Length: 357
Image 1 (cartoon, rainbow, N blue to C red):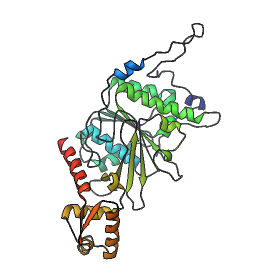
Image 2 (image 1 turned 120 degrees about the vertical axis):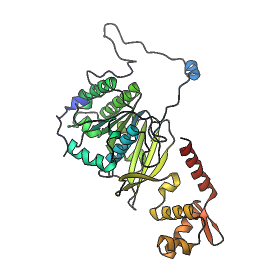
Image 3 (image 1 turned 180 degrees about the horizontal axis):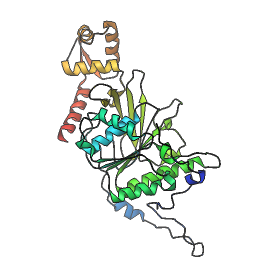
Image 4 (image 1 turned 45 degrees about the vertical axis):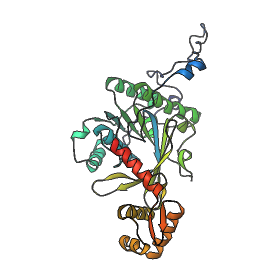
């Protein structure tokens, strides 16, 4: 059952917390009798010559310092992603069986839509160990973000620095009760940008869990709310369920290339999200992925043998093979089919990178 929180007043969403000071105070007005504060000017030559280190990934090719917003429909498995990422960072392990943790550390997890009673069995489904949980601290109650909550997070990170903060969910921490007489775009931008400033101040990653809208769309356009929700984050992840039951996790950001991961929520042992593919392969249907995996493991095969090994209709297999050839994923060599050299070399490159890590 969700935890009941005090209701925020609309005005609380229009200004930063009295206790929370934004990271940048450039342009902040002084006493009207003294006039406005002078702008801090930076010459373009100095900007051009300045050197800045590339951000170091916390989870390789996925999670970087700053604010990342992950959005998806209700019950699609967003919270499971958050918890698995928390375990990976806290335990210096791989996320979803593939992506390595590059910067392990402590995790602050704001589970604002559940109780400790609900968290316990979820943790037990994901891990059999308790040693790897000591670096995760859960929070179940917090003030509204713009009425003390931001200051609470800031103070907590000052006292106990963390590599990662997970907030589940934006609605639970913002607690917007009434939209009348409120500039929603500005209010949402202020709230999200405040979290981005906190992440920048403490050189950590904040993963903010949110929802997507019902309307048909893709990527950033599906995030629920105004454009203020998507203007401030450094990266936006969208989780979308496919007709075959698997999901696509699309990641886009300011400093990272857009990437798509095929995701499957495994209900067996081990339980949890598993990455099934990346890029073009991620967007294949489950049936075509089965064929790709078979050819990768068994080498060149004729359609009849593929159908037999996969226990599928021979006509269906031939149609799927033609689609894979058309997409450039496999090649036809006489009567046999094999993984294309480009696909194979790309996979070998990824495997070599994972090995070197």
